[in-house]
Structures are given as C-alpha cells and as structure tokens.
Length: 198
Image (cartoon, rainbow, N blue to C red; front, side, top):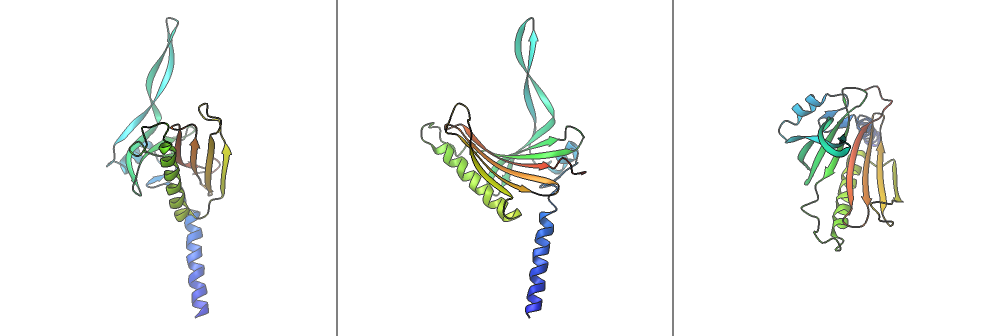
C-alpha cells in the first residue's frame, strides 16, 4: 500500500514538473508562430492593429504621424478567469515568429473617476493579487518576487512590484507599477527566452 502511494505521488510530481518545463507560449500562442497563425487561432475575437506616433518634420515643423506597428497586434476583450484583458502579441524582431504576449487588464469599468479616492490603486492591487493567485495555481511558487521604490510620473513614493516564473523557454512576469493615483498599471508578460532555439 505504501509503495503504491509513493508511486502515485512520484507520478503526480513528475507530471507537474514536466508541465512546468513545457511552457512555450501562452494559451493557443506558441513561440515561433507567425502573426497570421495567431490571428487564425483567435479568429473569434476582435483583433486590432497597434499604432505608434512617429515624429516627422515638414517645413521645419515637427508633427506626430500615427502609423501601424506591424510587429504586434491586440486581441481585445479576452475573458481571463472573469477579468476582461487585452492580449498584445509581439513578433520577434530578429525572426518572423511570435516571441511575447502581454496581458493588459481593462480596469476602466472598475476604476474610480475620483483621483483622490485611492480606488484606482485598490483596483490595480486587486487585479495583481488575482493574477498572482492564478499564476501560482498554474505554475507553482515564483522564482523571484520583489518590491522596489519607483519614481513614476513625478510621484516619488511610487513602487514597482514584480513576481517572476522562469522556465527553459519562457519567462513569465507579473508587474504592478504605482505612481500617484490614478497613475499605475498591471501587466503580465510571457516572453521567449532569447537563447532558446524555438
């Protein structure tokens, strides 16, 4: 009986360890996929291009021209365990394949319009804690966790809190940055480890 229990525990631990070593993307996105393949996998969602403001000088006058950034796009309104998130998909700058996905929660419906109420910070902390719980449940204990002072948007008492999980092919980073309310954000990134041949 003890031997059978030990074998079952060993198999269970082995499969957990194996799944921890097999993180090679996020969701249906696998590292090295083309942006067209990702679009096909998430065809049921609204996908919008990302734009950047590019400075141009015409007749000695600088203006900002909005252009489409072809190295990334946004999958909008993805339901992540009851939280509305946008998923930004990035192409590897040195190859054609996808190398990063970033989950950006849409907290606008929960955030307070009152800048002095402190509710925006509370909503971001709540989202951070929710992500942290989900990620620990899926990937186990983080490999690194820290909180450091961060000067953000003129606010000297700001901070940055990061929680990281590292795998052979992927780094997962949960980030909370806070400045003076309402300035701050929550972000989860899944990034291809650069020296991985995938």
